Amino acid sequence: MRHKKHATRLERMSGHRNALVRNLVEALLTHEKVRTTESRASVVLRRAEKMLTLAREGSQASRRQAFAFLQHKEIVHKLFEELAPRFADRPSGRFRIVKAGPRQGDGAMMAVVEMVDRKIEVITAEEADKKKSRRQRMRDMRRAMARKQ
Image: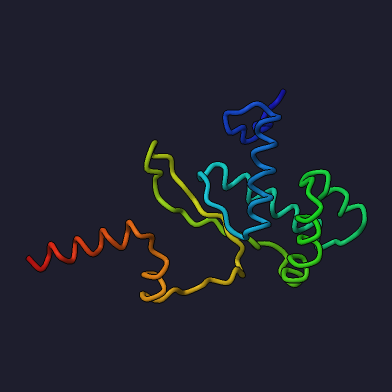
């Protein structure tokens, strides 16, 4: 009997599901943060933890197993040379899932998967104004003028 054999299928065929998870894990390891749905986030979290566990072992066999899944030499190199030493003293819990609310179009619950020790940049109000596009600056200017009148 196949009791308790149900894996998270994400409503996709196995090849598509594996490619989706691989791409999300690659994005997570590259950018140290990825925004996706909650169900995908839980699958990505488990797979990324396994990749970092392989990297902590550091053997040639574990490097080959990681490359078999990730299939990008640069990402495997970053995983083994940069990320594994950062998490050498941490046995597990190297990623966190932060719920981000519903998605605008279809209401799917979104989540952010990020590394626990990721550096967070704090942006001041002046820096935020400099990063605004021309359209945003014009909109703010019109709103400020409308408030004055």
